[in-house]
Amino acid sequence: MNSVLAADARDTVGVGADSLAGGAGGPAALAPLLAVALRAMAAGAERRGGPLPAGGAAGVAAAVAAALDGDPLPEYGVGAAEAITAVAGVLTAGTADPADPRCAGHLHCPPLAVAVAAEVVAGALNPSLDSWDQGPSATALEPWVIRSLAGLVGYPADAAGVLTSGGTESNLMGLLLARDAAVEKLTGRSAAAHGVGAAGRRLRIFCSEVAHFSVRRNAALLGLGEDSVVAVAADAAYRMDPGALADQLAATVRDGLVPAAVVATAGTTDFGSIDPLRDVAAVAHRYGAWSHVDAAFGGGALFSDRLAGLLDGLSRADSVALDLHKLGWQPVAAGVFLAGAAQALRPLARRVAYLNPADDEAAGYPSLLGHSLRTTRRVDALKVAVTFRALGRHGIGRLVDACHDLAGHAAARVDADDRLELAVPPVLTTVVFRYRTDAARVDKVNAELRRRLLRGGAAVIGRTEIDGAVWLKLTLLNPHATTADVDALLDLVRAAGDAVTETTA
Image (cartoon, rainbow, N blue to C red; front, side, top):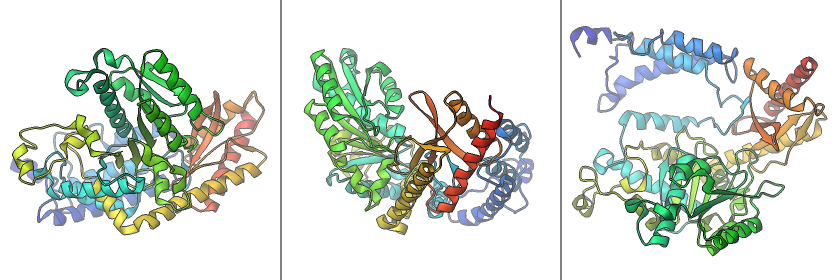
């Protein structure tokens, strides 16, 4: 950097914008900038004044453009303090704040402060998990976290896994391993080396009709096509019907096709419903299919003594997806993929001369390169390990139980209100309901009352559909919210519904 630009980059806290966050001097360089960032957050939250900014999308977009002065990459820098104050401030002022009890629209948790503090350390040190010499301690740390989570699931000591970007990536890994196992069984050849070929056109994937959309999208990414996914009927509680699954698997085999995978769900996005995991795995294995469980939402029940029984049979699955940035209160990303046996990850194995040469591994320098679909990977295990050590299983379980209690309270309150209607009793922490009005207007009123709350910055509530009809949804992931907070949120919904009804023809 030349002297003019270097001088231009200096800021009011006396730290250069080009200072490094790591190394022996890293903390000294980082501390004053963190103070600036925290002040910007506080000011931005005060400007927002609620769970999200008022004014809608256009107002937020205009504020972001103004903070960037129309160009995020000017010819000359404004300095670290000014940049942080403006950009972090506008992000905070314009965000949806999951720590606000009125922000309950999605599986978007308020992260624990202890996890965020650990995240700062991970960002400052910036290790990468694609080779031992880029992250020695990180390479040693992640397997400990994986073993702990595998034990929670009930997997044996030789289970394996990896931290992922979330449930979508974890589901992709499960389906990839299922596809490769099925192709190799059919052809005796490795799908990774030779492709899926004609065998791929015979493969079928089965999941509940209310499973996550990533199952179909991932099937397309794997070259199988979305049409390879067969939707299995769910019961009145939105759980996969094992009998219907068995019938469809039998019909598939009769047609000369191959059941490659069965994806069960432990915690559907809308209803929190949990498929009968033990029965589903038994049916899948009877037909030689890989059993994968998408427990991105419901996996948090494992921390709770009260709710862990809902996941009975989880350990029978060949692989499992978890998300600790849901009922684990971690900053994004904190997804987890687990396989019941380490050998299951064999299709991911890679030998790269500049990352994991065989003689280095033989000399005791391990590599996690063959555990992931990614090469460069952050040490997301740090925040998880710090949180686990800080709270323990019981501490995290208490947070899960608190959110479950809030959902029970919300459901009871909805059920007792003559202007609100409950869809189904909650299983985990989601409550699906709607504002009651006449049949001709009910969808329009519920859709508009939600937008009314968003425009005013009053609340973030979710929306879904049941049989084509519009319903509302509370996803309660704030363990520090109170029953009074839930009551106030439902009061806002009812008031918005009353207002919209008066103006809707």
